[in-house]
Amino acid sequence: MTSFGKVGVLYGGRSAERDVSLMSGKGVHEALLSKGVDAHLFDTGEHDLTELAQAGFDRVFIALHGRYGEDGALQGALELLNLPYTGSGTMASSLAMDKIMTKRVWLQHGLPTPAFEVLEAGAQLRRVPDRLGLPLILKPPHEGSTVGIAKVSGYSDMKEAFATASRYDSEVLAEAFVTGRELTVAVLGSGAAARALPIIEIVAPGGNYDYEHKYFSDETQYICPAELPAELTTEIQDIVVRAYRALGCEGWGRADLILDRAGKPWLLEMNTSPGMTGHSLVPMAARATGMSYADLCVAILSEASCKLRSPARAS
Image 1 (tube, rainbow, N blue to C red):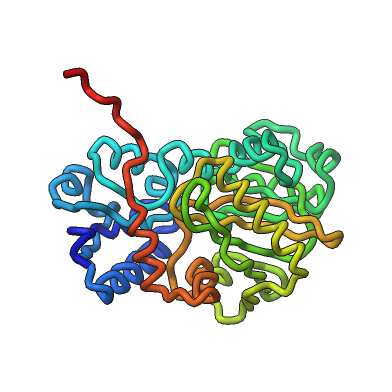
Image 2: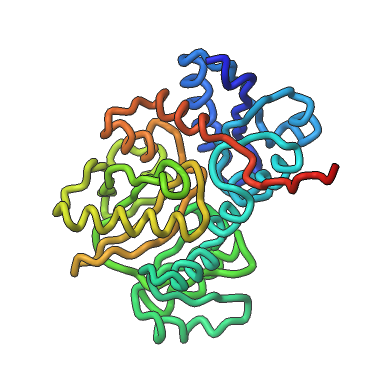
């Protein structure tokens, strides 16, 4: 496909999710090559912006996860370079990467997300369970969904859990724990054209969907489409698309949710540059609709653009 020109696949990077990004990028690169795209790998952890500007890319596919790739920083640089890129723009990427701001935006739009508090050094940790209940979850708000996360089952767990999460961030998100079924929903497209893909239910060993079970283990089970009543399926997909639009997301993304025992869905977070590895969920959902991994990559690449519109210059 020569219409895309020379395509850079940005991968690797410097975040805690570098290893996963290396796998995602290699998969995307191979898929694009199989479709005749002039694609080239570019590791942002080893090469700087000057080299990126000099690479001669006509557009780039962002296969980076976490800080410096998914958080709006890179997107802003690409806007300055006038280099079309996949996924959400600077603001949406920044909002979605910040779990605290994401929840505030969702609440402002009347979307369901678990109760939470923001903790900093010196916080009265033992009082948090009194307000949020037990168990609860502590998370660094600017990392991936399985990085630095700790479950608190009793008051005595708070100090260690806070120490674990605070290794990654100066603030820590304390979130009420919702017991139920773990779901994820991918979204493709932008604006009114955004559409949800089939819902996936994740069944991890012992209910522990940690880093190992997410990216490497073959023990985790994925049910796609999730076995849910048609009306509930539609409701969840609608909530996810609304959550995606509320943040201003574009191109593609994936929301993680919990369906509680009463059948109510709770939004946890939005990923604007989801994984594209052999265990990843967006390709799995796309496959359920008849779209191959390679076709998914091409579809995402086809929407690459600069999101900021420069004002017309006066003549």
